[in-house]
Amino acid sequence: MLNAVKAEDPRELRVIIDRIQHAGWKVNGWLIAGREEGRGLLVDTGADPPAILEMVRRHGVKIVAILCTHGHYDHSAGNEFLARNLGAPVLAHPLEKARTPGATDIVKEGHRFEFAAWTAEVVHLPGHTRGQLGLHVPGVGFWCGDTVFRGSVGSTVHPGHGTFEELQRTVLEKVLSLPGETTLYPGHGEPTTVAHELERNPFVRVWRGLEKPSSRPGRYEGKRVTIEVWARDYDGGHKAQVRFADGRRDVVPGSRVQKVTL
Image (tube, rainbow, N blue to C red):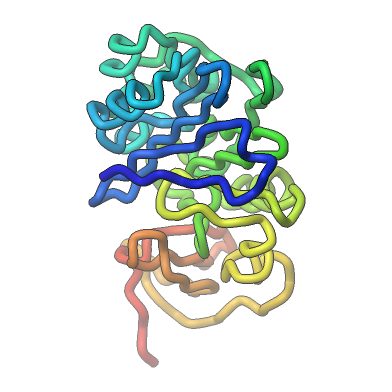
């Protein structure tokens, strides 16, 4: 499935932003490239690798690097295929490289890709995984992987995960601290903005103290929990913030939570 993301802001006219979105996983494979110089980057490769390759060729772009936000299969499945066909390195965070198929090089926070009319800076986004990466293109947008979605956030229970506190700090201090008009291009689902998520995202509203957490009882993998946030996720399902008896919190798939009726 091919979805073009059209620039709505004149500042974005200097770059091409396009994507392939997997019909089932709703995962995005993003292309960012200069309109005039014809060089750019790929962010994640799991959507549909042959379709991603066709997208790059259709735009006539030279890919200088493939940035893999994290090593989960839905984001990395096409790394080796696309690296081979595009002659580009696959970059991952040092904490993520060993679990990222096809990763050839490491890249750390602060690394800058310099192009003729735009710059992209790598940002470390621990939480969903310990070594997750994002990409900030000033004046254009922020590619945030599985950190923030439209109306939801990443989970903290999948392989290589970080902690709830890391995710919360990353979301509030590294992503949603950007100007409100900043477009967020997530790893799954549709683009959003910083302003929208600050005001409308149920998790963020609780974290900012705009709403009180719920106290509904439930079970997660057989353990008693308190369901503090219950929200629609990018795929039409749900995601939950749960608090365990020992006070620990996690963001978990709603499909694995059982609501308890008293």
